Image (tube, rainbow, N blue to C red):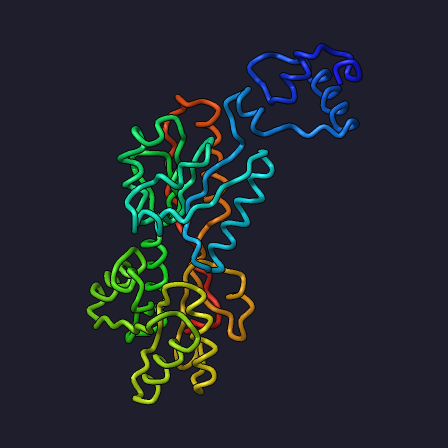
Length: 327
């Protein structure tokens, strides 16, 4: 290959191992890469890691419980990592830490860095122990939960909830209920619920929660049909997420309740399906693309320069008003 690229074997090795600490002319680097492509050469990741100390792997710590929003975040991260030539190893760290109280399994994979997304149980625990567990691994948290002690890109869901409540109250709705699964830790906690409570108390209105067991179609149907039969539906529902709001809309339609006229619906996250529902649904859209881009930028900066200062930013969601909460 060195002969084909008209350079030395040492230069070929440096180019193919990804070395950037030794100056190599761009023209020479291009010749080596072209020769490698023509000869069908594929670099060995393990050997490359031994040479430059980099694995090309980022740990992505997030819940693996299915949701459309998490799927959008995962797909965005995958696309962005490809551009910077990284791959990722996904771990449901909250689930693991909740049961075993350690990070042993998650840290078995050699990583260049870690991004933790919406890790409510583990983010502070890892931060407090990271100097002992992984002192040389850059760490960035993002989403609704973050560590103030490390770089982060947070999303202010409390501000999003306040926007949604201000909108519902401005339309004249006064009987507004918070809608979340009874099995969720967020049924009476978290920034979405806190924004709801603060707005209702400030307006001097009675708080109410509607709590299906889960956000399955059957459980939401049982919950809402019971309220319809007793004529106790509120005037508006602030749903914990968009998927719950979408199921609510379908169930209510079958029960003869017209969304947008008889009851208002607002969801959280900003998944695509809300725009194309039979009655388009108002949503508090999380800026997940900006969140992912900034988190990767912050992590990449720390990977390239371990002494890089902390970077921290709080993003505010955008309330997108649609027919489901029309005045």
